[in-house]
Length: 354
Image 1 (cartoon, one colour):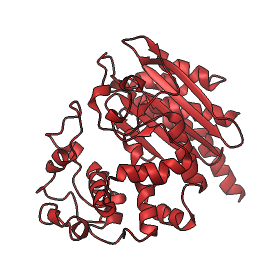
Image 2 (cartoon, rainbow, N blue to C red; image 1 turned 45 degrees about the horizontal axis):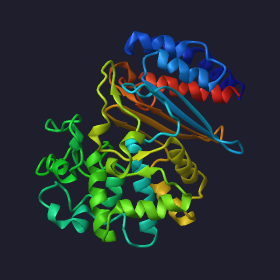
Image 3 (spheres, rainbow, N blue to C red; image 1 turned 90 degrees about the vertical axis):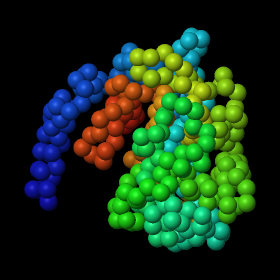
Image 4 (cartoon, rainbow, N blue to C red; image 1 turned 135 degrees about the horizontal axis):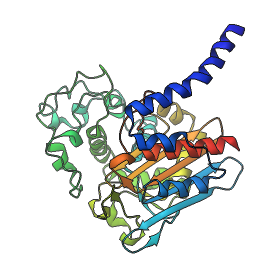
């Protein structure tokens, strides 16, 4: 036991040094300074510092158990109109929406409307012969990104910088293409999985799965500031999105679920504390998907995580992508080592110090 304690103490000393060395070798040099700089005393100071480091705008929501939620913002909601960041503004949350879809699947599997073992061909027989192994790929494999179906956003023809509103057009980019691997052989993140899951849900429900999420996920939590499409909201209520060192407003691209940081935080808290799903649904969810997520579309990067050690949800929205704000992967799980993540991790460290 004493030997183990000594090893742990040694690792605590040397690992930060190793991490700094790796950052200097593989990360942009201008990220090393922000990473190792002394922590400010407050979250708001760190949020302010993020703007000085090159982000256009940032929103942070912190919900610690038994304390009122805290809201932070700095920079711009809209640079062109000189509108300051608003912690209560709507934001494109990208792939965070997969948590809402996985929650819906857990509920529908529990009431026997869906089966995790049924295949893509069972649900969408028209795709057999057009998606390789459609008769072998189960719903569970799609939820878990173990299907081998190619990711349409990786296709050469896919253009992030044109409005993304036609799912069928995006699906065409991968039809009749070879699988990336045989089903369930390994994990590979593919947005096509959730595009297809959306179509499966629509068919099984007999109506839009968007409405199911509104009725069964959002309404019970009292969430009225979460939407699936840009045309459901007042355009001016949405935070403008920017590409690093360019001033074009990328709101018009669409192609993302939209929510306030508070709505995402309330949802994530309920997902983690068991108040969203009943015990059986929670067990199903735990068997198929994760409890945190990041989201990325051009101009928007979001992080939604629950930190069990602090019993705290921390949501961060940054309306700058590209350049050094989103990029390299680190050595611990492939999370991006861009500036947005550096800022997020520093905020978590500030909260832990408290």
